[in-house]
Structure formats: structure tokens, C-alpha cells
Image (cartoon, rainbow, N blue to C red):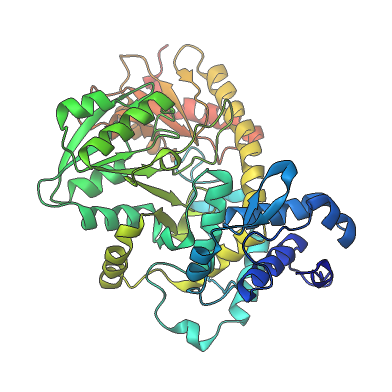
Length: 475
């Protein structure tokens, strides 16, 4: 393909990097570019087209993430030599355009300042989301009113695969990405698919209450595995139930303590799964929000035996009522999952998937996450400083590398559950850490969500909390 064919349209709303990506991709599928063909350097192509080199690099990075390019440093870039397989896969998609969605925004007035698991809704780009929704709705075709693909809307699966490759180090094809109705939908799907009566399941203790409740309501046997400063204690799990069928873990930021599982323990967990032929669900619910230190590679990126099912959600990165999550699964599970999705709910509604896909492919998702990381880091520090100032001898706060909440340990003579119940009567929503424990010695601490606490409001809100605590505070 000659460079003269790489025309760009400066009058359209489609970003230039996206136009270039589509030109190269279409050239590959049409046969104009063949496996092994050399492409221009980003510097020379940027000069010829009169665009920034970074724009070319962004297009090349996207092509590389999806398997079209092989980048060889100073030796230049070539069209991937693995294209026969990729071409066959890409033919399955129905459209390269993103469709539409109808979303309902969470009412900020129903939100409590310290509430857990909710992103900063005051900072969500609602006007942009509304514009994309309107644009997609105008293009809504009658054919798209049929039942959705049970595995998910293809452009969204492509966008998720690209995002995971670039941001989380997970190399997967769109075919292996399954769109679900939130993380709970993903967990429910997997548990019903792989668990049989009396199978044992490792659950972090303390851990995410949603997973605890879902597994407890199944026919599987819940095995509470203690956690420490490094997350789930693998050796304790082996001692309790060495033949467990499934382990559900939050290694990036343990839910709810936010501690990070070190690489050595991740490898220990993978080794156990490989030896036993067991499954691991990696719940990466807020891995995007890391503020200090190096973010370790995901379990899935270290998985060589396809024992890890990677689960993500847009509830923490966009907004909860979107009800979209995703799973990365191996090829051997796809047919079973498709059948299960058809039987259970026939897939997720196309509309909200389509808007999310466009939001991602136009670069808004990456920019939104970058902005939120910066703001959350500031809000976390502001709340921590306010808590220490208002409760200097009452709360013992320890910060972890990331996450969306802060843990504050209480004195032994004050019970976290009782304190949470008391302040709830004043309209303040905290969570007791001990309420997340199944069998382990209860952890006596409060959990504060900081994402919806503006920096300027932190001190005032902490004083309101102090007033609500009343007589439970020491004199």
C-alpha cells in the first residue's frame, strides 16, 4: 500500500490516529498489505502526512495491540507474520462501527460521601456521554433491535481487548472477551458453568461480600481463606482445601483492605492452580487506580496454562448503573459460555455496549481514567489528613498503593459494626471491616470511600462524622 493512499480527513470527528488505524487494517484485509510487508517509520509517515509523530505512534500501538503489526525497534515495523489466523478471526465481526446506547445516570443526590464502590460521579463527563448516546441512537437500525450477540457486542469486545493489552498487559483476542451484566453477572456465569455440588471454592477472608453471598447461595462449599498484608494466604488455602475447584481473588487491590498481592504469592497461587487443574477468577475491580509504587502484572498476564479467568467491570471506571462487565476466557470455554448466556439471558443489551465501545475507541475512556487517577490521589490524601486531624488518637490509618477506599483501625473498646450503625442513623454511610469476615478473627476497622469526597469538603465531612459518633468517642 503506497503512502499516497493514506489520506486523512480533517473535517470528520474521527480522530486521525483512528483513521490511520482503519486504513492499515482495511489494507490488510483487502490484501493490499501482506504478512511481512514493511511499513513506514512513524517519523517519515508523520512528516509526509503533516501530523504529529505521536499520532502515528498511537495508530501503530493500536495495530500492534490487535496483532496486525510486529514492531522491531530500530529495524522497523512489519505486518504481522501471523495474519492468516487473525484474518480468519476478524471475518467473524459484523461491523467496525460502534452503535448506540441508552444510559441512565446515577443520581448524585442519592450518594453518601463515604460510600464504597462508587466512582466520582460529580466528575463524570455526562455531556460527552449524552452526545455519544444521541449520535448512536440516531443511527439505530431495525436489524439491531434483534437479540444481541450472547457473547457481547463485537466492537466493544475489540475495544476491551485493545485496552487490556495496552493497560493491563493481557494479550487476548476479542473472541476471548465476553461482555456480562457487571461483575456479579460474570461471577454467576462462571460459578454455574464450572462448579458442581460440593465443589470447594476459596474465598478471601475478609473479602468482597458480593462474592461471598453468591457462592454461599450455590451448592458449592465455601472455604474462607485468611488474608494478610500480602492478600490471600495460599498455603492456608492448600491446608484447608487442596483440591478446591475455584479460587476467587482480588490481587491488584484486595477487597476491601486494598493490599496488593506480591509477585511471589501470585506465582504460588498459579502454581497451585496448575498442579490441581483448578480455576482462578481474578477480580480486577479497580486495578486502574494505583497511586504509588509499581503496579504488578495481572495474574492473567502471568498465566501460561489458561487457568485464570480475568474479570473486569465498568462500574468503578464509568458508573454503576451501566451494568457492564467483562470476562477473558480461554477458547475451550467459549462454546459452553455462549450456550449458557443464551439460556440465561440472551446476552447484554446492545445499546449501552455500543456507547461504551465508542467512548473507548475515541480515546475518552483512557483520558477519563488518567484524570480520575490524579483526582483520586488528591482526594485520598485530603481525606486521610482530615481524618488524622479530626480523630488524632482514635483512628489508625494505613495507606496502600492503590484502591478506592481507606481503612481506619479502631480502638479495641469500640466495635466497628456498632459505630457504623450509629452514624447510619445520621445519614452517614460507612462500612465495618468485620462485616466482611466469614470465619477469620474479626478486623475492627472502618472503611471509608474517598472518591466522592472533594478535597475542600473533607474536613467538614469528618467533623460531621465526629458529631454523629457522639458518645462513642472517648472523652
